[in-house]
Image 1 (tube, rainbow, N blue to C red):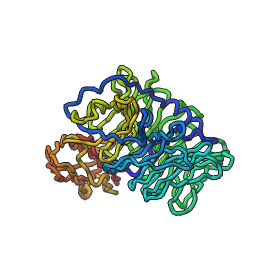
Image 2 (tube, one colour):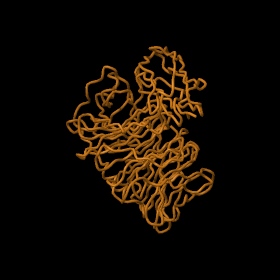
Image 3 (cartoon, helix red, strand yellow):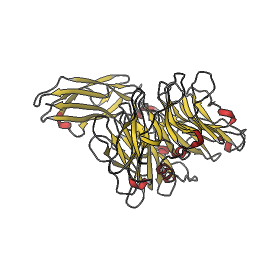
Image 4 (cartoon, one colour):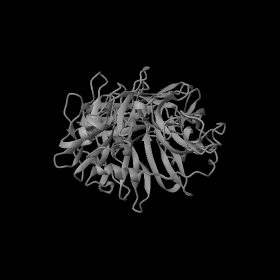
Length: 534
């Protein structure tokens, strides 16, 4: 994935003057009660993962064993916060966990305060916040042997880092002098101070995510006091993305193509807003739909424009959803038997992780494999030979990368403390197949003819043969495309096979479909097919 920020952590934005009241309401809506006291479920017959405890920066008391995960990169490196017992009142520091067998690394803090890592790029550079009351400043830690760097503010006491890209550019929100207003910023990693991205005539703005092209999204205030989602690229002014069915919109995520997701509607309450998707193709933002309840929240977007989060039902329960960006409605992912579930992250295979209630009120981490099966309790997918299995209850998930590695949180029943864990695939049932390329564009093709053939390579990255259970077309126009393949029913270790695709339009206009490969135990992989009949 080409975007390293999930939705902004709502607790951060309540500190900024003139920030939307909506985000404070979201924070309350997302408070989850985690109950401990039941043993892990019976292991699945097809175990998939082993856990690695990320550790902590402390020692000597139960609190000092605490750690939490916030972000994960493609190499399985993670950042978040861990308790540091020698700080006054039991504080916490940002960390880098390198996934190389070395202990969690303390990134320090600014002015002897506390710190938390919120985003990480492919080089292990970390962006986050460090506070020493009344100051709370965004930082970058460059992973080059130098201390974390204070990114400063626009004259006020507060700034917040929301995302970082692979070039080490950081975006977020910073207060002006007197903390009168928050403004969206980018730190370009070129020796210059943070840059104010502007607004739409009103006093406030905030940046929430950045992609590897340096495109930034967030929200900015209009002169009339309303807020609109924006897209910004260096050398240009903010682009107003508009709104849908209301007066306000707030962008929370952006993918590699500059597609944006967020909330749009009326007023300061989350109950007045619905999830939107902006395609970055000249068309207006579109509403995703709901499950009929009062409020919804998107949490993550992948490079295919697929989105996960949660939507409420008429009875007030909240269910995780996935929106496939293929013309179909949002899909209810269900629960693990209780009333609620929340989709937190989605990778480029469309796998979703999050948390869901059991029927008896205990919250568990879940995985949805995008292969036609229901969400699964991750505790039931841990290898029986994992020594941590009998002691750890996984309660929530923070991220999943394209290798299928999962950053989760759980409780060690021996100490009763929360820890961050990395789950990695083990055995022949993991995320083993890769597709390249992930999109084919056929351009303009006269109707009732066929385009030139384009190829997709399917690779088994594992040391074991894997089953190929299905290859099929889906989407809004699957009959406008055709394919053939030589993969058969299984693919040998480290072998490749080929998909051949053509565009065969029967009517004029733009067409889209997806060529899906299901196999390898790690969920559905898809290639996006586009073309225009002429």
